[in-house]
Length: 92
Image 1 (cartoon, rainbow, N blue to C red):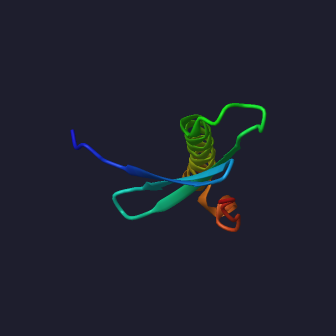
Image 2 (cartoon, helix red, strand yellow):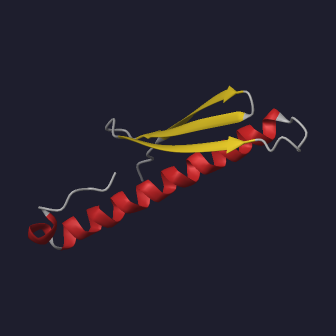
Image 3 (cartoon, rainbow, N blue to C red):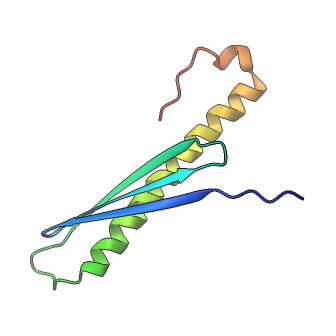
């Protein structure tokens, strides 16, 4: 059995109470799909940057998973009914 490897790279940026993250999946053929997530600390909460990082990254990974699921649904439709879905655009 051949093993395949896909990489996910996560970038986190913080500015004040705002944290943003991007999670980019790269397949062996170079295809890239990126998910994004954000978090904002409530001013009443203590400043714990790791929590903002975790929340922003979890949201970016969730967004990436959603986008990959959409791509998969389109790929399945294309393989089952290639003529019907040839004119449909991907939603990513």
